[in-house]
Image (cartoon, rainbow over all chains, first blue to last red; front, side, top):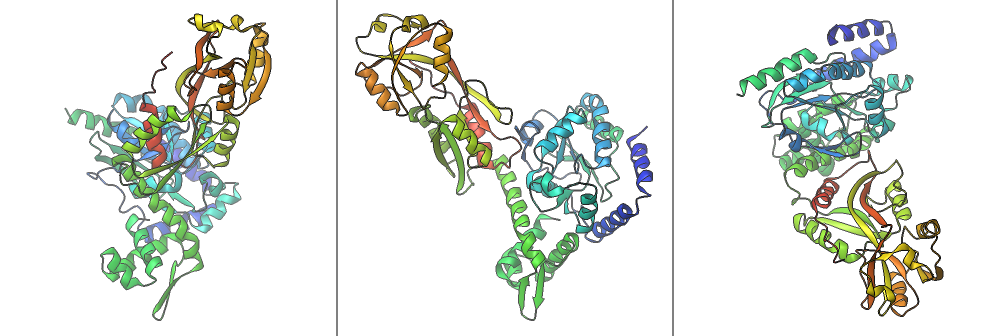
Length: 217
Length: 295
């Protein structure tokens, strides 16, 4: 089953939740009107350098990682989002293929502290999860937006407290987005969608990495 | 949201005038207005209200302004961090150092850090490891250089820096002068001065008892210099870390059978908001070559 199939199953499940559907449609139309993500990093753009803490509290510098090979940078909202969870798990399942194709996976979330370690531990993820404290890296990539009050209220109804998770009251979260960046820091693949139920397919990521590896010989 | 949208909005916050803000940002007024409108659309509310010739922030604008300032500041820092730290202005790093490390030991490190990053000011707090740990937890310190005899609590992020042996200190003319090192059993019967600032202070009682060595505690003090002065004057012996600054006239030998040592580490709180200044310091201290002991 592809990731898209799994996500489709989730979409069908959630269709019956009327409150959620209203908030979802409202969010999408708002993001569409505001043209959110339309000026996110594109093919050929240079990825801005950044340093972020990982789940173990160590600082990870993008420059140091790039020196070792291409990066797959995956923005996700948090382990509260079932679509994010499916994506994180699908990426873990494809990790050996991603690595064989020469890529190194980084997942970036606005979650902080124990939410990172919980995500890594509970989902049994072996790749780097970084905390985008205050959303700066999301903003640099052009994928950051403020979750509308209506949407935040629906999440609160499910016991999801974004302020507690993020350590601030901004409500800023990223669009789900995946970028592949080559050793020179140039974006060679970009998937950005205002619809958080849509994600980059791991098979596509592997194919793009393979093309990069073969093309750069 | 986009960086330029936030920048333009903050410029209007400063000038409270769209035209002047556009001038300050080097764009046309319509372009700035459009950008702010797009930001308002995404944020889900009006950030600014225009009334006749006056412009002011809405309540929503006032609430969101600090968040937008913070994220923008962080984007500038993220770029600076990776390129060069030299443009960091008035950055303040709060470092805690346990009092038994001693200024000399730190001077080399601080000098190197200042040479590499002159824009970063560092405030230095001294304290016993327990106090430094509390300050780290409360957010009063960014980092601490310290040791913990039983190891650190799990809540801390620990990066070992160097290992330091404990020495026996004694006055000139003492019998230990004739030995290259002092075995734990050799200390039996000596008068002992306890250095209360040392995180190993209470550790010695247990250690000596374990090795069936009896010492007579004659004095205890938080003052390193008082302890060392009294040792020099013949009041007794003490145990101290090998890189301690020493008063003249104080003899030292490594303690052996067994050796006692401490692991000095850089300690931070995981998952905390970090700053480029902190990243800079962690980088410097990790690479720093601590001077070897003459012993």
